[in-house]
Image (cartoon, rainbow, N blue to C red; front, side, top):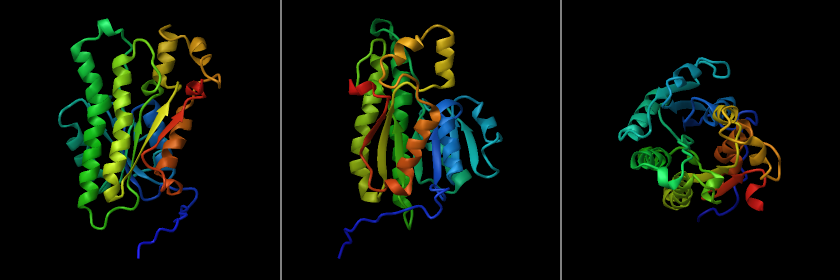
Length: 268
């Protein structure tokens, strides 16, 4: 008889709830992806950091990554072979993969009339196509493993722009909306092999890129945060904590959900 009772799982080591996980984190050279990578290693996981910026190769030797816990790959996710290359490298470094964090994204603020076909295609390639085929590779990997890994998980990083219209972000918002829709469909299709799939939609996050555009005058920080109920940016670490929760043992009943972390922006 099937056991339908709640599992009420708790981590064996509360200080390392992700112990044993083998994860890929894309866009991990800086900012949010790097914060997620640090959080996962602190919580006991081993990870492959992926980024198109070669700086990612230096990250694994920095403080916060004990020897043997983090590996790096420089790869442009717009490349046609990106997904297969990432998983080949992950299997070499980690042995296998049970967790995927689709964090990498390209953001382009541009009026519709100025957007070129090449720019649109690159947005779609990085923000939508790459997460799809990376998830496909995880599904293929998990389906072939015997026994299957315990509680494999995917977290896709979308954006509040998938849910609220803003000028000069039509193409970007479209890719994030697609990622949100794919999350729900992935959760349904992948449930058969036990993969949980969730989405995180952040509002304004204080990353090195955010700091750069503020310093250049391309972003009015005061005007932006005044649109939020909580008058500040989110830190990368706050988002990373949520991502880690969604991959942890206390979230095993959570799938197909979009977690909004936006300081109350969409509540208005």
